[in-house]
Length: 185
Image 1 (cartoon, rainbow, N blue to C red):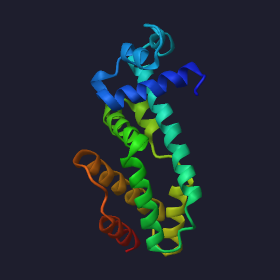
Image 2: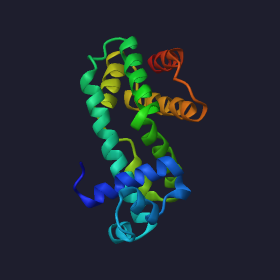
Image 3: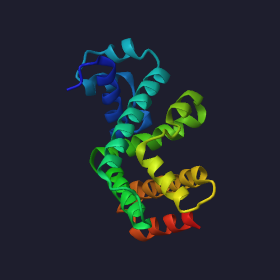
């Protein structure tokens, strides 16, 4: 159980945003979700911008923990199939359960970050073991500008995940195979 009040409120804000969208994210809604007296959220996150910043900071923290844990469970990426398997696992995690809820929040916050440079800076992709494994795989296979290709590959994966969040279903393995093959060319 979370004992830090700011983290508790950020987690409640994540839930509110996942369930009710950006328009439903209010201090009162977060108070209700957290089971705290009215005004509590406002005492810790005075403005809506502060609440969004706290929410996005927590989102990135949770995402990074998930990415590190996922990378630790995967074998080394030696073949294109290994990369596809890792991407398929990440896609499943981001389309189901808490991963789905965080994906909905992430995309809502990404749209908000268009007008908020502070949010955009927090949401910038972070280095993690999975991203590094993909970059190393591409570099090992002679791909020029492996950093750029890694960014493009993972951005395309995010696009496929968004498509499935909206349209339903799983990300087709053939689509992932095509992305990896394109990255290797």
